[in-house]
Length: 294
Image (cartoon, rainbow, N blue to C red):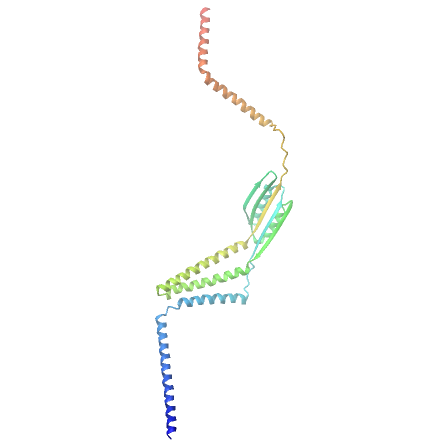
């Protein structure tokens, strides 16, 4: 009987300890939960920037996924360039015709460099032409040639890069708007304001960089580039052993010599004017004496 009572008391003590332990742990967890709620209320604005950063990354990833999954249909962005070297009869005339061809098809000539030696005349210039007129202008330029040394055409497909930059630009503009909203409505502390402004400045730089790259690609895609080298061979004339001036040069030399004689005579009068005066006086004196004798 005593043994049974002892067992029952032990079981009751064990149950009591378990109940007490459970109640203590429950109170502790409630206390922790309340403490966390108080901390969240006290720091309500602290996670704002972290949330914005997560939204930015998720938006970029989701936009990329949409692009890949939907297969965005866009016009192909292809940069076309060409360079050619051609021999012509007359470099000046061929250059004028090339300018006219470019203007006729709404293009223009730039970066012109002309050289002239005893053996060749060369002109190097660049034609910027609308992409739809690329082939006809290139064929027209090569049609001016007596001989085509070479003609090279290169194409670069930038469609994927264009789509990627466009998507990133759109996403960054949306994220910029979110940060501006945060700055106006949610950022309360000085630290949050400074962090938000720093993030805005960084995003603005990225937006401007993306816009610059897009503008560059649009220009390169819209206007193709043709590098043209025109040259003309010159047969050098044999130089004579002695130089023989022609009639015109002799006439010029004779007129120059005659004028120099006149100049020298006039200058001589300035040098001998005292003798002229004395001679004139003596001549008048003797003439007067002769008249007196008669």
